[in-house]
Length: 200
Image (cartoon, rainbow, N blue to C red; front, side, top):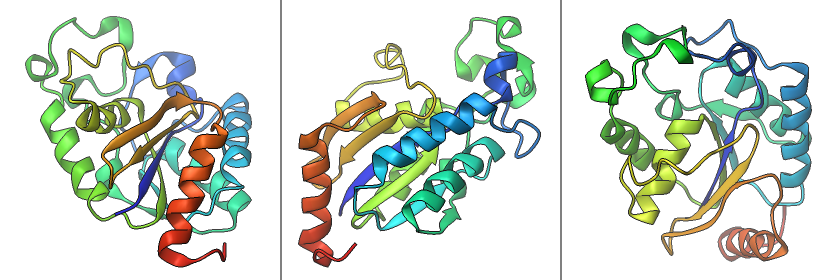
């Protein structure tokens, strides 16, 4: 097993318009979102990365593309790290969504998010960048913090931020950070080198 580097997509039209949407297309990154993605890419550039996987949703694919171009590794689409299923509230302004549980709203459950993300994480070997969305990332992090949906409510994953999980040690190294500490960078590169040697 290796280390998962979870990146939320940059700011998109969904954020600006304050709506929830799982549509594959129609809500691209804003100019600010592209700048955010470039900043994340530059932060990841010194790290030895093996794979870049992305949600099939446009805002995630665009973010992953910027990261991939900077690092020099082609990205691939991984459907299991897709945005939350919104049910009948897809493309609804946030303020119009009733304050009920996801189950009551007919949305994808917390357990479903964790199941699909757990499957992907079990396949990670080396350092994988996974470009996804706020709620799926929150659910993945919570697997290793032992938190349920309510207990993890305060975990805010901002646009184009980085969270890192050491899967072998089952340890969360950082959550929703714009920058990687020297400690985390050292752990990431040491993990890669232990498996693959020092060639980037």
